[in-house]
Length: 276
Image (cartoon, rainbow, N blue to C red):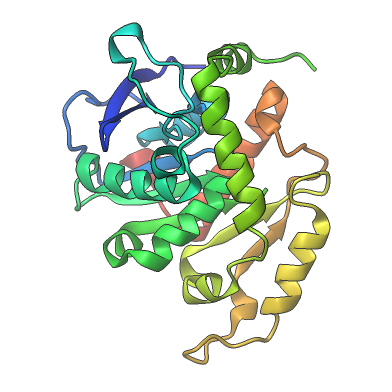
């Protein structure tokens, strides 16, 4: 695994951890890359859980890979500590996390860069909301949506970071709002972005069970969108086998998911990524 560039960037006055992979100048912002992969995590949103997965994506595709934590889900360095209520939805709720992703994209990624957004679990919900609400982000995005035991070192380190009481409060707040607000698939948004989406599921996912995949498939089959396009053409796959929802907890799972996702990116978009 190659080592990431790790930095805390300030998003709406909240220091938030990012990790970057690749031999590129990540210190100079806004980033101006022809293409880049941007990762939104699940919950907990400590992005270092995904180190092995993102590192392998970068090695396979040879383009910049940037992972963004959920704000409040990182243990902050002492000089960045703030007196904030980490149980306050105004700062750390689900709607705030969507807003922070928007600010991050607009402030740190040059408008000429094309984004391949890879998202896991609640990160997928956030991705769909960005596509639905913001035309400038939608026009720049090539979206990849992931549905979804020797423990890798990155998982132990990420879990240790989350033991900070403030991180636990923010994580619990977001989880509570997820359970209250995210109850039905965003079918209308999916229909409007069929050409941008790949939705990948597993057979052993307790959080996003096979029934969820089957429900979405049934709702989209031969069901035209508002423009009359056939929604049955969406890239909807049951392809992760028996890998758990928390795939980051095993190195072999992270590498297998990376292999699947990198193949989807290359074949779906006919991108000659290694030459760029």
